Amino acid sequence: MKRLLSYLFAPRGLAVLAIVVGSCFLSFKYSAHHEADGVFQELYMHLVPSPLVIDNHAEHDALEPLVEVPVFVGLFDWRGEHGEGHTPTTVLFNLQIFQVAAILMLFVCFGGVARYLRTGKGDPISKLFAGFAMWLRDDVVYPTFGKANGRKFLPFFLCIFFFILFMNLMGLAPYSATATASIFVTGALASITFGAMLICGMVVQGPLAYWKNLVPHVPLPLWPLMFVCELIGLVVKPFALMIRLFANMSGGHMVVLSFMGLIFFLGSPSMWGSAGGWGASPVGVGFAVFIMIIEGFVALLQAFVFTQLSVIFVNAAVHPEH
Image (tube, rainbow, N blue to C red):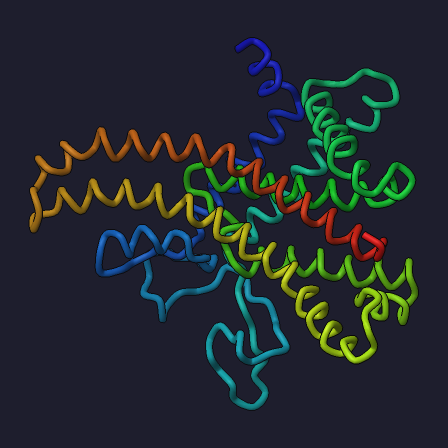
């Protein structure tokens, strides 16, 4: 307990706490209110990104966005106005709050890591994340890339791991939103890995040699078929990253919301009334808390799995013999 308090009340610990609390407050204050016909539908709507609006109790058609951002594709027009002279705009969602918060936490948590590794002096937060960074270096990146190439790619994979980890963990806080439970966020992350595979592979091997080396040594008549298969496999890899992270993070939240929804469902007048709601509360809350504890582990595990697979995929692009 003493060590935990030392982490929490260190200056960087207080800064991290302020970022998380501030993000949850902004999400609660400016996120649009969810409405649905049934209790389960209304609970599951919390997994859907909410636009940031000024009045979250207004009707949907009367919502005033907190921030409007110009876009170049009318498909994403928030107001649906496609008249001449109208600039299509979109709005910010609550997911962006926690994405920005994750970036701020990267700067705060790693601000003293370099100094600690050079001098051995630092606060508890710096020591904690220095240990995490060395673990990723020695057990994830270096065993796959080797020390020489691993040093070049290490900052990239460190950013991926901790960016995903912070978004996953903040999604467990009250009034928060899990950015990685959105297919658009995980798709963007997978696209970054896909881009690293292509760019790093073509830089190291050469633009033409990279595509030629996709296919192993096979008889010439089979080469076109094998090239198509390898091309499909190249696209499937980031697609699997996208679906894996999205499904695991949204699935755990759906289980928690399902247990909580049972309380309101059994307590409804059409079921068992208040007696059913109070009777189901200990079981529903107990299972929900149990799943939340597991989700804390899953948040770390999924960040690790995404990073580990990204390391393997990028290394395969750089070293075609693998």
